[in-house]
Amino acid sequence: MKHAGIVAWNTFREAVRDRVLYNLVFFALLMIAAAVLVGQISIGIEEVVIVSLGLTAISVIGLLMAVFIGVGLVYKEMDKRTLYALLAKPVHRWEFLLGKFGGLLLTLTVNTAAMAAGLFGAMLLVQPALKAADLCVLIAVYFILLKLAIVVALALLFSCFTTPLLAILFTTGLYVTGVFAQQIRGFGNITGSRTLDAVAVWFSYLLPNFENFNVIAAAAHRRAIPGALVLQNTAYAVIYCAIVLAAASVIFSRRNLK
Amino acid sequence: MTGPAIEIEGLTKDYPVGFWLAKKKRSLDNLTMQVERGEVFGFLGPNGAGKTTTLKLLVGLIFPTAGTARILGQPVSDVGMHREIGYLPEQPYFYDYLTAYEVLDYFARFHDLTAAERRARVEGLLKKVGLETAGKIQLRKYSKGMLQRVGLAQAIVHNPQVVILDEPMSGLDPVGRREVRDIILELKRDGRTVLFSTHILSDAEMLCDRVGVIAGGTLRGVGAPGEIVGLKAKGMEILFELAGGSGGAAIAAQATQTGNRYRIQVPEEELFGALEQLRGAGARILAVAQVKATLEDYFLELVGAEGAQGAAVEVSGR
Ligand SMILES: Nc1ncnc2c1ncn2[C@@H]1O[C@H](COP(=O)(O)OP(=O)(O)O)[C@@H](O)[C@H]1O
Ligand SMILES: [Mg+2]
Image 1 (cartoon, rainbow over the protein chains, first blue to last red):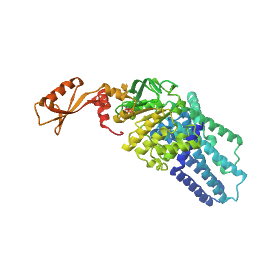
Image 2: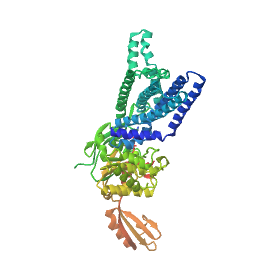
Image 3: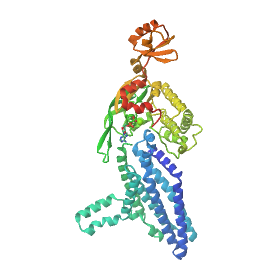
Image 4: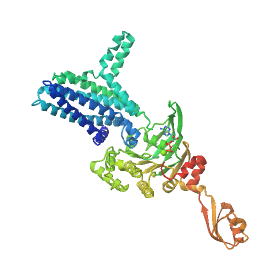
């Protein structure tokens, strides 16, 4: 566990020293600034526009980071053979994976926090002070982060056995199906076939389900988000990540490094 | 503790090859050997012989098709055993966004060292491998030889009992090679066990207590370099002067001439006959010496001409 922490810290350090990240965060802040401008021409609903555009920007930029860094996490270390010296230390392969996951998650948390701070700054431009109801915006950011954790876990899984390009395809593919998970679940009903129905249901349980993670609309209108949903989403993300990481460990622990 | 430092038994590795990875290529075939504690063991062979494969199996980077290996009595599948081993990968590469200091500190963290111990070890090692001034530079700016030094330093940052080095001299200039040799000898003085692979024969000859020669995935021979060389004494060499090409021409004709000096090699049992002949011809004998086969001769013989060609010509890394 301590070893995973060391790997995580190094992964975070790598990200901090990579300028691409700053550019992405800067880009997100730019989008939020644009949202302020757009908000100004939509009199009366400025706050709604700023929050929904801002959260969307955070989500999109976060996903870009999660996917593009995530798919390279393991692959790059194998490809450049930086992993060889590391695995000759008393480090288990699962500790390495967990560390990589934790490191990217830490990176995403810090970046998301920076973007969220930008969003709250933008909100303060159009409203005098933060209200209690604005808490739902923070919860929406938290849900984005949970979603990113699942995406990172999936990217890491693919990163263990395939090239970054394929891993990007698989991860984004899974992400998209995850967004439409509910519809897939209902797919069997449409066709009316019982087998297809069963397959679709089982398949849909394997896929991530991001249905409950998107509360951008609710947050934009400052509708309260139930505490139960916060718990449920947290538990879902933790369990889903644990299963995906366990699968990644099983695959990676058997792998011969070329 | 007793018993050998490294025990390898029937170690075999097949790599899947071909488009569907359905075919198998045997890279290491039934390797059995031991490295004793405190020994410097040279693993010698041409490119593609299976040296790297063997060392990677020992460190658990790849898994054997068959056979077992133990280090200090522990199976190599036991990651905890890695506390006692150090490994320098072939053509090492490290995180290029870190400085040499940071990389060594990072690797040292996986061993139970206090912050102060870590700093002392890392600073000492940077000095030892000649990187004290470059320690604060990011590795992206390092040359191959400098990376090799970082690699060597990280392999011994935790004072391991068993040090496994894959081509430690490759990419280094003569000064660097000399430094690496000194480090290996120092490890030996400290009672550490060193297993290193090389295709550079002189390095092995200078450093090793024993060498193992591998080619085509099979071990061709193991022994002390001196032993191998002594057993294979090629004969005697006679150096003589011949004043004004007299009647001894029969024997002088077979000799190589430099000025009025001649040099000739004869089998040991023919030495006295040859000396008689030379004396009869009025030659002045300057020196008689035993000609030892070099490790290189042994190597070439074992490996066979076609396999050794690449190895013999090549002086530094691939
Ligand atoms: N990942 C791999 N896949 C397929 N073949 C490999 C792989 N690694 C090594 N080989 C083959 O195994 C043989 C031994 O390689 P190696 O152990 O690297 O030799 P050496 O280190 O002695 O030069 C070579 O023929 C090489 O082509
Ligand atoms: Mg090699």
